[in-house]
Amino acid sequence: MRNYIFALAFPFVFVGCASNKYVPPSDGPLVTLTVPVIKRDWKLIGGFSFGGVNIAVKNRDGCGMYANPVGRDQEDNEVVVSIPADKDIFVSVIRNHGNASCHISSLFSPEVGSEYRLYFEEVGNYCVVSLLEKKVGGATEKVRLKKSYTSSWDGVKVCDAKDKL
Figure 1 (cartoon, rainbow, N blue to C red):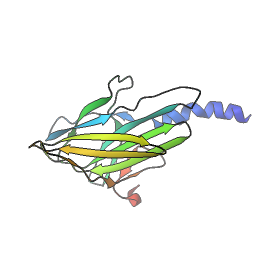
Figure 2 (cartoon, rainbow, N blue to C red):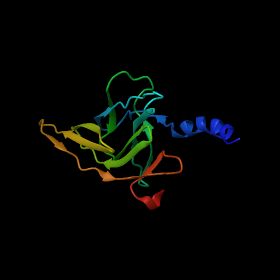
Figure 3 (tube, rainbow, N blue to C red):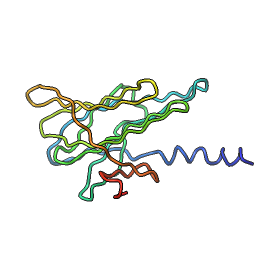
Figure 4 (cartoon, rainbow, N blue to C red):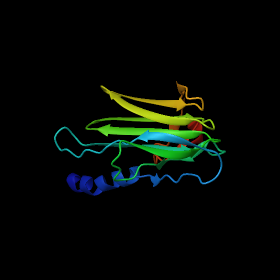
């Protein structure tokens, strides 16, 4: 009986992790954010792996709703998306590999005229996320990411403070 319950519940676990497709804004000042494409691997030996990058625009209430900027069958190793330059942006990187997983959720404030690149790296049992900003003059510097909080209920709502969830 327990096997039947697992077989019925398993597909719903993945449906719950799905997010909406990110739609870039059409007005206001924009900057670009280059994000990595985290590939899926469905090997039975060694465990399957999957993950992704989600972004959200911070609203007046200090929260946003994550959306996925990467297409389902994306072949490239990275994707360039347009984000608003006048609003704070939430970024989430999720990686599951076998029985290990990580979820890093952060927030940054883009500046008009800059370009941004998000990096993700697995180092042993740890995940590292960093963000670089290329300024108008060409200088590149690391951006200090602020902590953000993702809802454990749906995994889509994100806020700048835990009590807003």
